[in-house]
Image 1 (cartoon, rainbow, N blue to C red):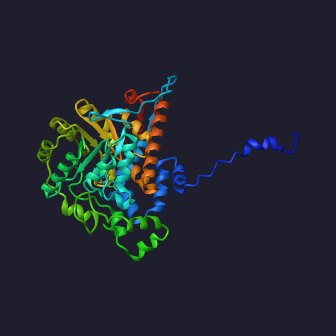
Image 2: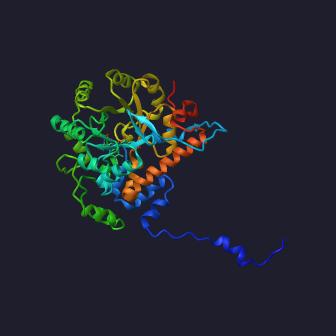
Image 3: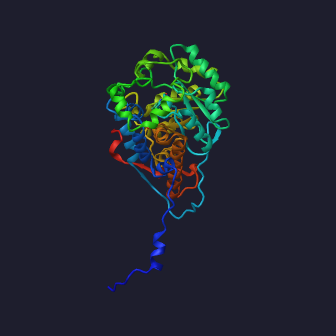
Length: 409
Ligand SMILES: Cc1cc2nc3c(=O)[nH]c(=O)nc-3n(C[C@H](O)[C@H](O)[C@H](O)COP(=O)(O)O)c2cc1C
């Protein structure tokens, strides 16, 4: 091998330094290539109790771990030699267009995770052309969400309280504000056991203890935002002081039945979706009632632990009710590939909870934009690699569920 001195002419092309990004937030968010990367940034920037409230699930957190595992345990079956130069992520969901096959799931206490809260979610959804769902336990008023997403699709999520008049007054306000869909959540007759919150002594609003103060030192921005913005109040509810479990158990009505659902349905002028369906028989009952959609969900593993895995329920439920009723799915989605697999097995739409909140905690509105961008890119790339141009071309043959978590018999 003959050696020589490198010539400046040869070195120059190797020395194309990228212009440094001066905006620290943009630099931070651009460095995240996956939702898991956003999660890491979120954890660094959010006090432990608020992060754990978001990330945690019920009991031993088995429901959530299994739901994520089920998505990992798939095999994609691609077709080759297709022209995939253009790929279309749009579809019709509940009678209106969506730009991508996922929306932002309803989450409570969102301004506690990061002060921009629901406004960041609703305005990011508006920019992306996907639906935003506001929780009954949200921390931004219905009308303010409408103002943040004035032309796009807003959905309202209902928890039925013991005080039914007050619950239905919220539903009425959502209708008046032009929310097009009501999600009735049915998997919270009582609060799930969120053990992380118990261990952290987590309460609403957060209490200042020696531990929280020490934990706050490396996270000054969260605290400055928290202390210099409107105090946490619910979308419409009075202030509360206590744990989330106590709040749920004191306010929520554990007596709600199918009859009550029929009563709610009569009063809602838009589309009605029941969120938290976990077996085929209930799905059939709801379809017979004429609901517009059902969401297969175990609430992100935050209610019953060791609950059925929504992704595993999907094929049977689609087979039984998919012709009459839209089947949506959430729990465990951390990648666009999870969404593609769900659509292939017959889901019409999916919702993201933590994936959205990790983005929010990592960087407010821009962080949610980054979540949506990452998922959108992953969906488009996965579709192209599978050899399809549109969601309608995705079919069950594109996915094989590997054995590990399949129920026996
Ligand atoms: C912090 C947090 C708060 C939530 N609050 C609500 C809520 O108020 N109402 C509701 O119907 N679901 C709520 N959920 C459940 C989500 O709507 C969704 O079903 C779940 O997050 C999906 O799972 P994923 O987080 O793995 O995407 C919440 C979830 C999280 C993580």
